Image (cartoon, rainbow, N blue to C red; front, side, top):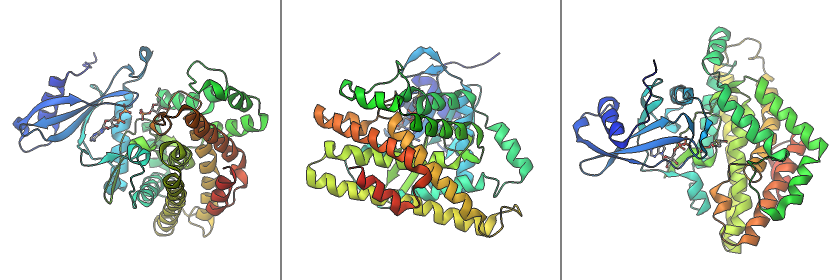
Length: 399
Ligand SMILES: Nc1ncnc2c1ncn2[C@@H]1O[C@H](COP(=O)(O)OP(=O)(O)O)[C@@H](O)[C@H]1O
Ligand SMILES: CSC[C@H]1O[C@H](OP(=O)(O)O)[C@H](O)[C@@H]1O
């Protein structure tokens, strides 16, 4: 019988005392539930000096932001912990450290990152983190290369694909990214003034076929162990430090999905900045976001290429030129998935602080309109955008 029970704050303290790996566990005295995501409970555990020492995260048997009417697998806690453990092996400097996890209780204890800030909040305030884009590109290359067929033995790779089968969480992505924004759906949450723009998405056959193709690849291309939801709210930043968290959507999928999600959140911020800042600051902030997009992509490609030269184990995949050809396909996927992230975050269910923080209603609508239009452009252009500079030119053309 399952021993699962939903933790109270006292349960979280007792659990952290037992499994937090601290030399002085009796010092842990209280917990605060600080979860602000869509899905889970997150407790900070404090010591007698009121310092937060470790974090306990527990999955609920349903989607937190909706309630018990939307049941959701507890296995996501295992998948999150195991994805983070795997990513930590390959990129410890940019992955949160999981100290302990228990699949039955759907709980994990992890390193406290209170010295960091969630990147999305910092992007909204336009606070610069000069290393963040290159660090995120490096994290993506390290984690995706080392869990791909370039590096893993074919038997190990297949075992890993099986270990990370994640059907319920993938189904959320399949619905939220690739279905709901393109059909009339009760989850959708865009301003009424944008009804025509949204209807145009539904009736654009070329766009629907391109989205179907991206969804098909999300179903079928088990290229590497993805984070699965690497948006700017899943990334903590501090001066010269970046840590990925929140990997419960982890599964073996197309590498471009992770890269595109990361790029998409920079571009969502790019679209929102005119509503968040005075014109001159917004213009400078936007230039910085475009530079971040370029730096992230180039850091990813440079590191992946270097790893491919040094560490590819498969004889055929090691043939000179193959890694570059593969990365070109990853590039096209990344641009396409980036477009779907722009549309799902503006038309669909999971709205973001970048847009929600804009207080001027008319400006907010215009920023969202821009993101929808840019998303559509990127999805359609993905197979034809040759390189990063061509992408930046398209983005500028779009307004
Ligand atoms: N290791 C951590 N250290 C400090 N705060 C954390 C940590 N992990 C999560 N949090 C806080 O909890 C919030 C929700 O965590 P998240 O993993 O995004 O939950 P969900 O899975 O529900 O989206 C984060 O936005 C962050 O503020
Ligand atoms: C019904 S889940 C919606 C949405 O929530 C996840 O985000 P997070 O865990 O960061 O709050 C994910 O992006 C899902 O698409």
